[in-house]
Image 1 (tube, rainbow, N blue to C red):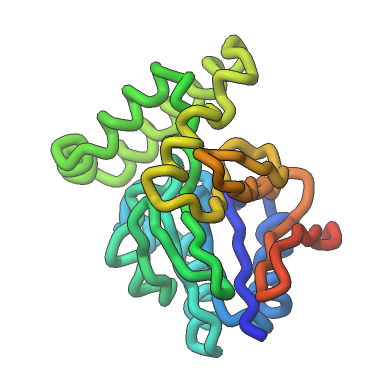
Image 2: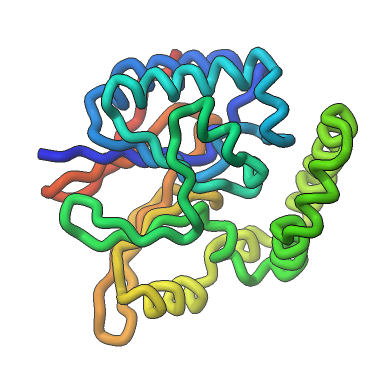
Length: 243
């Protein structure tokens, strides 16, 4: 029976060694037994460009993924809001296949729409405007033309600004908008939907135009590691033991 695993929002960085160790263990155990591992964004705390593969930390994470891929587990990646600059260099180093967002895939015989999920948070107009700007070709080209050290400084400043903004935004504004979710499901033929970003793991049922659609929200890796396991019998969440 084919088994597919989904993770997102790990926010891996050198200052969180227990979670890094947990992820490395996950790659050699649970992920090794799966047919495919989908990473739905924010694998890293941030990715400043593929030239950051020169950092030992980033290289080590990619090497772990590459080993998993070489051992037979397909690794597939959809960029998140923290690592949308991951490109061909990342793909080559990690052995991952880069997917567009959204991607409609056949998962254990069921049409499944895969997203990072930030595009679903349409109530946060300020964030959506920022998202459109930084995803543009012009912004990307201009940003990547700067020295790596300057890019990292700018990203750190943006992260601090984002954290400050979160303190004053209502929680509901930062969650998926039900109407936007319904429109996305409608546009893609009423599939199952799996996404991350909101850090609010839950299984939702949506009734859209007479169709019943499952929406699975992935958890983050701040408190503990976790993944969604899907096969022909369905999907369920699995928590990893703390390190």
